[in-house]
Length: 164
Image 1: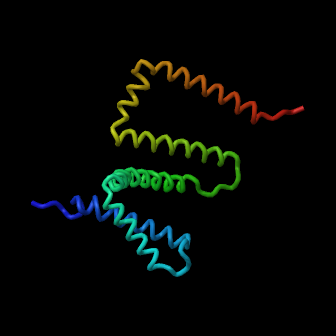
Image 2 (image 1 turned 90 degrees about the vertical axis):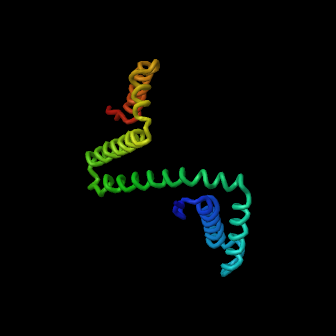
Image 3 (image 1 turned 180 degrees about the vertical axis):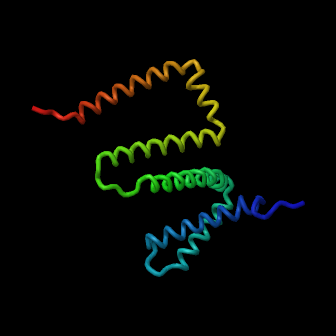
C-alpha cells in the first residue's frame, strides 16, 4: 500500500519548502518594492530561483524542514493564548478592582497554558518530581519564597504612598 501524497518525501522535503520560500521571497519583494513598482514578474522569477536553490541545497533545505514544525507548534500556542487573552481582556470601566481581576486572570491563563503544555508534552511528571521530590526541590522552594518576599518588598516601597 502506498503512502498518501501529503506525507511522501517529495512533498514534505521538496514541494513544501519550495512553496514556502518562493512565497516568502515574493511577498517580501512585493512589500518592500525593492525592484520597483509593478515588477511582479521579476519578483516571481527571483522567488522561483531562490526556492530552487533552496531545494537543491540539502543542508539549507533540512534546516527549513526542521524549523517548520517548531514554527507551527508555537503559532498554534500563540493563537490559543491570544484567543484566551481576548476573552479575558474585555472592556472595563476603569475601576481598579477590574484591573486587578484582569491581571489575576492573565496570570491564571498563562499558568494554565504552561501546565497544559507540560502535560501534553509529557514533561509534567518530570517537573513535579524535580520540584517536589528532587534533591533541589527544597532549595528551589526556599529560594522562590525569598525572591517573592524581596520582590513584594520592592513593589511595596515603590508603590507606597508617602503621606505627610
